[in-house]
Image (spheres, rainbow, N blue to C red):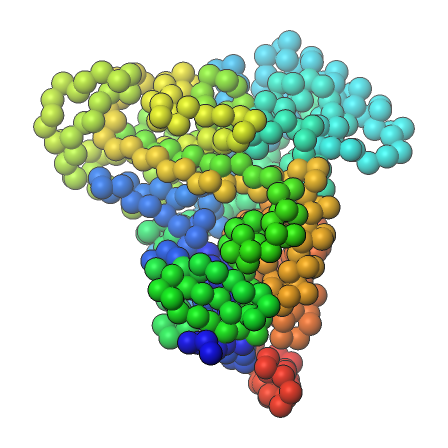
Length: 517
């Protein structure tokens, strides 16, 4: 006999789990519970605060959306105008001491002449070959060559993507690309090279929102706060230690047992199958690959330099720094760092030398957040990584040797990026249906392992759509048709819709008796 009985159990209170819980609470049909091992909601979209008062997201997160339901839920959680800042993305690639506007492949007009020639020649060759190609690219590397040519491939795409994914592009498939990577327009690129012009902003996140206070994690705490307390178990007594899929019982860290009808899992699917003790699925999950992510934060005393300006995030393909991306986190909100009047001592100067005084002094302050990938193919000197990153900031002229460092942050996330490897689809097409046959919907960034629907809006809607699939059999568009949802405004679901449910005697999950108004 279990301690708790629910129709739907949700594991994990990151964006996907909260999407599921929000939908379950909204439709007010099946009984439900959400559990998480952490004391607060957010998962891989949470925010840490250093002792000095600098905020760092656990990775480069911003809010942009393909779904009105997602917008509704965030606006309900943070409804005031001053809860948000809206930014235009100002993004560059650092190359040979230049700031090349993003995306790099559309802005080769900014490169040195010899590199312009290499890139244009490569694009022309690629365009000619592309006209006669009658097969799809076999991997990401071939996609790069066909769309961008050898010049852009060698100068930017190969080295940058290796730094991000920590595997060579030859070991990645290209089904995931969609709106993630810009395919250059050869005519426009050539025209811009001749006229010495740059291309405009590209992509779905050219404009984005960011919360005024508490970082990205504050969004998900606020969303969680809209849910009933009785349906939430966070912390040690919400940690899942065992999943008995046959008996449909989950055991929690404090010994509590939860009997469920359907399970929505958002923890990493390789961790899930280990907790299930299902050796067949454990063996199958070994075919999924991921990289780890190190998030490094550096808090600096002084006015934000003019050379940094209002830049948002920056890309680094070269080997003069370990990080692949830098975010000027202090540009997103003035509350991401201490007030100028706060007194902080200097830890050391950027070149490692001692400060002239141990005395705490006032600001102002600004901050940089860095991301570094790691895998068995791409090892990292973890012990010296912070020092190496600060040296990389000097090498790339982001900071100066004499700059005063007042705060540092370093956190490693074992599961950082779900790699779209060549083997991925073969594994997922077998693993996810096997779990669903056991009444387990595994969804989310690592729950369903599809990076192309791993943004916060996608992740949230994976949870929402899993609930609708359980309750009404609705097709999960985000999971199964990512290009479709990314290519349109998804307005079918709205938070203002109402639901009426009835219960059939022979069903543990209530059946919908009326569609939303």
